[in-house]
Length: 291
Image (cartoon, rainbow, N blue to C red; front, side, top):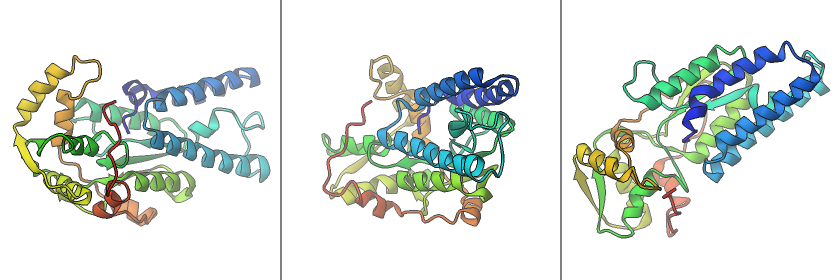
């Protein structure tokens, strides 16, 4: 999802503080808190791909409908000031998209940040759902599409490492559906779901499948991961960094999920890799993924 690092580290902590402050203030300050919370949400999703922004806002719309129905119309529960606080739609029933591998002990800083954010959320006192997707792909992604973009100019696809690491790529449309279901279904409340696609393949096979769907034949040219990190360190000083050392670490790590709880609670239909790729790659031009 590429949520800004500042939000991954501080966003859930902000929500926890927000709820504590709200218990002590009147309507005027509560409205200010609501405006600030919406601004935080918009800042967090501003740089996301358009499809991801739409999905996040879609979840907020669904949550708003549920809140208005349950609190204001049916009166199942009431808030302290007998209104629907402006900050509730983006906060209550929050679905935080994390990543498989989040851990306090991880040697990768992005996984440690995600774990810290999850812990803040779980300790906040609000209803929460955490979804940890594996390797997300789809139109406009900056991972698989970046690999395939080399095939427009080169007779080979440069790969770092041996490409044998296990991958369980998940289609962006499936992530959106699971996110919406998790936000709306009571049985998903206060649960952590890992989310991967229906197939486990090597990274080599993922790229080969995508090339086959495109109707292209390209050789995979493997290079040592350290060579990629060296190149990334040099190119990372450019204004639009095409490669970084962290990116090499990310793409050479396995990405496999345990879908057991997901299947028990939400029973999603997950799209096979080839079928999903055919919806946007077959006969289509790749979007610009340089940004």
